[in-house]
Image 1 (tube, one colour):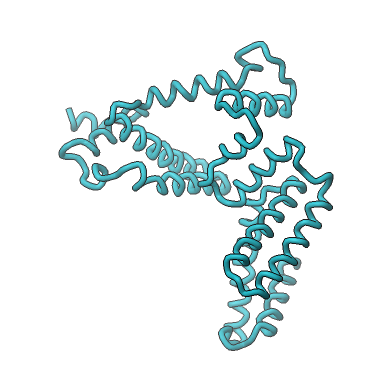
Image 2 (cartoon, rainbow, N blue to C red; image 1 turned 90 degrees about the vertical axis):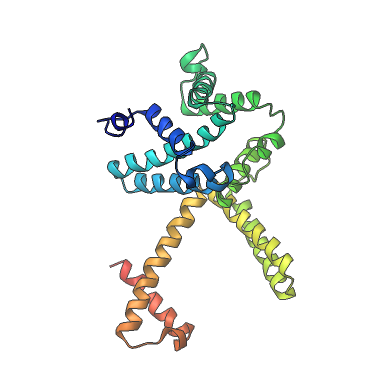
Length: 268
C-alpha cells in the first residue's frame, strides 16, 4: 500500500495532506513531529517571499515550485490543527470560498460595481462589517503588526486618509518630512538614543506618506533603492581594486568620487 502511494504518477492536494499526516504520525519524521505553529511560522514568510521572487523573475517553473512550498506550509499548519480536532483543509477551503462569495456581491449577488474603485469600496465596507470594525480605529488596529514596517505604515495611512485624516496635497506631506528631519537632527545632537529612535521612526513614517501621495509602493521603492546601492557598491569595489585603492583607509571623499563615477556609468 505504501509503495503504491510512493510511486504514484501524479499527486493531488489530498495526497499532500496524507504525506504530512504520515510525517507527523508515530514512526514518522522526528523533525516534523516536533514542529509547532510558532517553530515554523517564519518558514511561511520565507516561502512566500521566494514565491514573490519567482513572480518578479517571470519564471513559471520556479513559481510552480515556490507556490508548492507555500501550499505545503499552509497544509502543515492545517495538519497541526487537524490533530487537535479543530479543522482540516476542507474547512480552510470552505471558509475561503464563503468569504470570496460574500465579498463579491457584484458577481454572486445583485450589487452593481462597474469599476475597480466600486469593487474596492464594496470590499472594504463588507470587510469592516464582517470583521465587526465599527470605526476607522478598528480598521487600523486590524492591520497586522507582523507586516513589513513600510507596508504596514502605508496601509494604516491609507485607512486614515479614507476617514479624511490627510494632507490636502503632497506638499503638506513634504513639509512634514522636513519637520521630522529637523527633529531627528535635534535628537541626534542630544545623544538620547530613545529619542533618536522615536524621531527616526517619525521620519520614516513621513517618507512613507510621501510615497502614498505619489502613488508609489514604499516597500518596493526601498527594495529598488537597496538594489541600486548594491549594484553601485559592486562597481565602486571593482574600481578600487583595479586602481590599488584600499577602501578601508581611502577616506570618504575618494570613495565618493568612485561612487559618482559608478553612478555616471549607469547613464551611458
